[in-house]
Length: 362
Image (cartoon, rainbow, N blue to C red):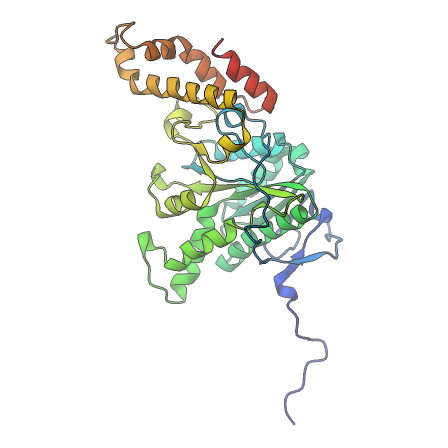
């Protein structure tokens, strides 16, 4: 009479709790916490909900310290603060993954969490073995939900990577969270929303997509005063390098800054292909010294003035002496270009970056 409960089944919310902790460092798992690297079980009984409660905004510590990412153009021109959320806006094939790998290997963060969401399977293996490298992988936890996994698994993978980062932050560690990519996360949500009958809006994205993005991004950042931090880099694919893409537009509004990679710079062999005119770090003015800000602004001004007058200069139509700022930009152009470029194996820390920035104008 009545229903009989199955003896082996009991009500549980374990499905929403997944493994976290130090056992994940050096490991690669899928969106459900299952190892993908063939190194056996994770060996941890620490579990955490993948959708944690948001931190009270008044309890969050402000961004007051810089995070050294080992890339000169970012350290000097787009200084990153601990607990900042940045977008890396790029088209395909402009060096996005390589730049992320440099940041992961050279950062001063204690722990790195990488969420590879909706990427090609080949890219997942390549990112882990070649771009992250052994030194980066040893202090990294990687969550991979490739393009051929179901859309729910891709959404869960992004939430799980964030939950791992939150766990380390709550232990007082400074975490670097790399999410590649926010666009594929939005696409997974679009698939689900359209399947359940939501009306498509901008470029086929239903309204729930734009509601989900801030929920994910707001989980990163600083914890309570005296605790750890999650500094996050979210990549955003600009389709056809279109900066007006709806996801790129929405991301720009909810992040604390954006680093734009430019295809023309990449084609000219300028790596990393960071367009310093279009890029901005919103936390920079609060965490850097006044001389640093003046030098960065001066470099940006000279770089911008040269770019705008490039055609005049190249055809010899510009007469020296008619614009003192442009005269200085022409003299310093090669040094500025060299300053903004960096070879992949080279690590340039914060002190070196600032020293080289100020020495440009001496």
